[in-house]
Every structure is written in structure tokens, then in C-alpha cells.
Image (tube, rainbow, N blue to C red; front, side):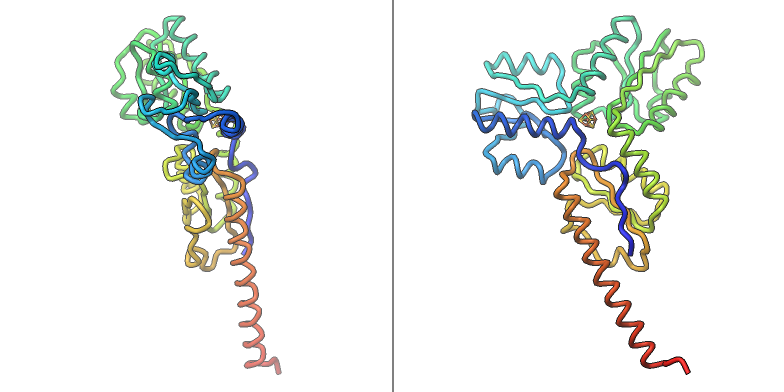
Length: 298
Ligand code: SF4
């Protein structure tokens, strides 16, 4: 059984920087992170073990300093936190800032804002909470429900697959041929690299293993992408979730991971697979030897 890794996988620089800022700050002073810094339980457990508080609501924060996650937040939310007398540290990824600025620019130029993404995702809420009017779309049906405007300004949640984003932008053009549709591509480069690498990987393997948190949007997107090219795809959070029966007659097993999956977790999965492959190889050699003994060539 051969094990291959996607060319690009695992934690992106935005998540790494956010974790580094949280750990560095927590060494100096008590810290609470507002919201999930990443959608990965392994990372969150590690942060808790360092004494870092994790809260979803500013009212529950017991420290002077709070950290805003890599997903970013709206000005409205940031001001609310500041008004409680808390020091706000922003770990917002610079590519999320790019998406916020693109949206602000489109609105300032008079475009009706449309965000391609998940309405209830923290990053999308951060983009939309300051807007008086906006639409969030993620499906053909959502586009069908859009009201006609003279000009649409479209951006995307940073972790959406770019082919879906382009398809939806095309549908907006089709549905409103008289309207101006201006699209700014805000899907981040690490997401594009991981998506493209997942396509290449899934085409080459019999089983694809996607590692990432149960609530990680970009991990779910990797699962969907791999499933288009590979029939046996499994989403796991750690090596403990792997099952030997998944690899029956699998010659090539591919590994990919979402942008919040730590390297140590990926390494643990790879190690489990290598050990399993080594046991399989020993077993198949023993079977061959027994066969040769039972049926020697005349
Ligand atoms: S997924 Fe992209 S936008 Fe989000 S933190 Fe990582 S690099 Fe930044």
C-alpha cells in the first residue's frame, strides 16, 4: 500500500500566526479568545491546556485582554468588545482583511454587496454585520432568489472553492444580463492551493483521507472535492478515527488536511498508515511463502 500526501495540505500561515499570537500573549498576561480560534478540537485543547480562556460571548470574558480570531470580526462587534473595557488583540488573517476591504470598496462605489459563502459562518458574519443591506449566496437557488439591482459587487468567503465561486458569479451574470456584475476574487491562495492539490491527489488514489475538525468549513470542502474524483473518502479528526477495513485492496492512499489541522496530527495519521502498510506487506510476504511451499514449482 503506497501512501501519498497532497502537495499542499494542513495549516495555513493565517492560522499559524493567530496561534502564535495567542501563545505569545498568554505567556505575558491572562488571555481569552473570543470564538473558535480555529475549527479544530486538537488545537483548542492545546490552548485550554495553556490556561487560555475560550469564550463565544464577550459578556463571559474574565480577562482584560481578548483575542479576535483569524476569521476576523465586524467593526460593530469590535466596538462592542472595546466598550466593555477590554483590550482587543486582532489575529485577523491579512487575507480576511483583504476581503473586508474589497467589500467596503464595492459598497462605497455603489454596488449591491453579494457574498458567496455560508451565511452563519463567523467570517461571513464579520463581513456583513456592518452592512445595511447585503445578500449571501451559496447555491443556484440562492442566486434565483436575488432581487434585481443595477450593479452587484461580489466577493467570496476566503475558504470557498474557486470553481463554485466562479460558477455562481456566472449564474448572477446570466440571471441579470442588464446589470453590471463586478467580482473581486477574495478566495485565499492557501485555500486554492489545497483545493487544487486535493483534486490531483484524489485522482491518483483508491482511498483519500481528509484530516480536519468536524466543524471546519474548508475541511468539508476538501471532502467534497475529493469525493468528485475518488469513491472512498474518509473525513477524520485524528489517527484514532482510522479503521483498518477502509484500506481493503487499496494500492494507493492519499492524505490531505484542512487549513486548521496541525502538522503533528497529519504526521500521526501518516505514521499510522505507514505502520499498517508495513504490517500488510509482511502478511502478504508470509502468505506468498506459504503458497510457494504448498505448491512448489515443478
Ligand atoms: S484559510 Fe486563508 S484567509 Fe483563512 S486564515 Fe488561512 S490563509 Fe487566512
